[in-house]
Image 1 (cartoon, rainbow, N blue to C red):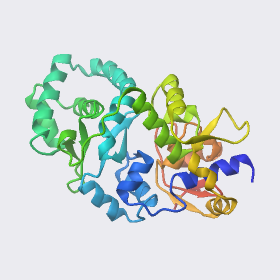
Image 2 (image 1 turned 90 degrees about the vertical axis):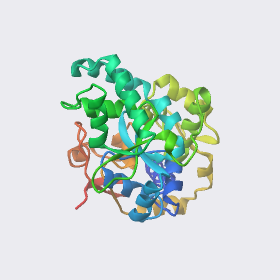
Image 3 (image 1 turned 45 degrees about the vertical axis):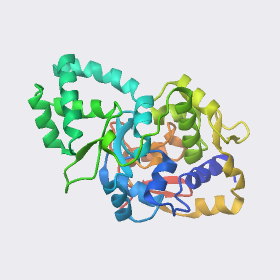
Length: 316
């Protein structure tokens, strides 16, 4: 088996696709986050890495063990409830700076932002709110939520580490204050947070590179290098493969049979799945000519098939 095939197999194994069995909450903790802008596809992505039962994942969301938030790149992910605040505060600043520029174009002043934030936090400490109810709170605080101002504020406040999405009410999103979640938040910052990020990303996604972590977490190159350097129980992958790849030390126990079995399995995966979106370099598994079928440059994605560790096209 050549190194590229081995890398593909090890990623499949690391992500839990070949041997699922964790609970929904355990799968979320292992992965740290799975892309979830399409609600059902995010639920399915966790299910495939855990209980193989979408209903079990939805039950974990209902119990607030797993929440939906904007920790990386300003993009919705499903992640473990206890990791929300430190993740969003570590990975969110670059997105927040970009949002400030957008805010000017929307005609929202900083005093209005402060008033809307205070009103939203106060309301959410009382009970969860649906999206329409949240927009009513913004309006009462003096911010017209129309013309994208409501969605902008929802995402901005979510990125600050205090607001997440809870279980849906039918097809309607609900929003929850992090302080009301039934689990305590892990208090991580600085190098401790970078070490946790690097450790969990490389164990659940490795072999992966610094560039992959920069993409996935939306952090700077300097931060990603520090995170990899501080990561616990990781080893280098391959001999001179690419720019340097690392993986969990536990992968030393993965044998040739497991690698071959992982590649021999055909996988039907949801849109925006982590096996593709979890890395900066997509071409290692996605041929350029198939990209329009699976993941467009303007952010559209569809379920896809993967054979021998390579994406073969859109799923039926």
